[in-house]
Amino acid sequence: MFRNWQKFPQYLWKSFWQILRSRKRFLSFLFIVTFATTLLLHSFVPVFLVNDQAIAQTKTQIKLLVPQLNKPVIPPSPTINQPPDKRQEIRGVWLTSNDFRMFSDRKQLGEALQQLKQLNFNTIYPVVWNSGYVMYPSDVAKEAGGQPFVYRGSEGQDIVADIITQGHQNNLLVMPWYEFGFMAPQMSELAVAHPDWLTQQRNGDKTSITAAGEVAWLNPFHPEVQKFLTNLVLEAVSNYDLDGIQFDDHTSLPKTFGYDRYTLNLYRQETKKEAPADVNNPAWVRWRANKITAFMARLSKAVKQRKPNVVFSVSPNYHDFAYRQQLQDWLVWVRQGFVDELIVQVYRSNIDDFRSQVSRPEIAEVQNKISTGIAILSGLRNSNVPMSRVYSQVITARERGLGVSFFYYKSLWGYGPESASDRQKEIQYLFRSPAPRFANRS
Image (cartoon, rainbow, N blue to C red; front, top):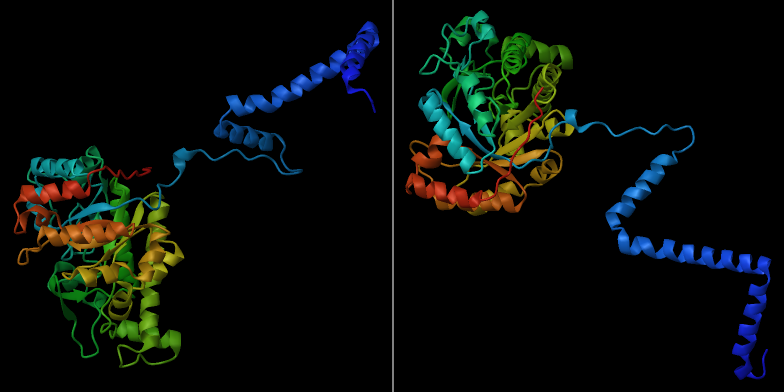
């Protein structure tokens, strides 16, 4: 080491000139300087000129260029044929038979759907199967002897086709609703033509009292009933540019039914036992519920084979009631993967009761998988619902990440203590930002 530090710079400068005086040493020095400068620039330039996204893209490209041995690089699938997002927000409303005057008139229908669009709704569920009859021209219903007439609009138009066309013009998904499911009035043409299709209670009664009045029940375990309903649905799926189909709490069977001759024989053949007299017997409940589940799975599969992107929607009661009272195990339906959308009916007047129902664990489970919403009662002809209740229930549902659908269109504006314009303003505030749903029609 140098003892005299003051002479060190002079020594360094002298050594530098000795290096430069030699050609070979000079070229070596120049190469070292150039190489070092390049490394420094390579280190600093990305920091100033390239953002994180570009760096990530570069890394991805490098990975694609160096695939694993013996594994070909598979390009990403095109998005054009991908199914729609399974967890889209639902802002829907049912168009019921009480709304028939509106949706059978093209002008009124157009004004109603345009209004829904302006209020940022995104889905409508028009009734197409009610009281044993369908709303569209049906060879299936005609051949079954169940419908000697065809519903037509005020201008002779196909009502269902018109609803779908105008719904799409207003950016609304249209999902025809098979409201009556396995129900049919006892004196309807269908029930009269096929008495063997009806099931019964243990005491022989073939009807029950429901919100739709006194009805009979088509036997969901009978192959001819299953074939009829399946063909009725596939007929609509094939003939219309619909976005989905929906079944509610009536695609089920009250627990007191299933004591018809066909079902009793089937139970005896499969279990080697007689059907229990107790309608709440766990094995008897499970057997019947499993049969309905199996049918719904086949129905969904048939629909998807006909038109893969059709949304298979169900709107039942809360699960414990649906299963124990109606043999409708919809949670299993979702877990088995053949349901695309769930809307749980929670028609409650008390907000605490409403909050308890929408917070049930099975709803939380389902909403992580598919589009999930809560059905809210907006009024009935003989029962007005104040907008304050509707408003608080919508807020409660949306706080939990749930969509909503209102039962039903006319009651949104026509049945309530407030004026129609005031009720519309409340809905406009609730849905002040658009939430479009996108269908992938084929």
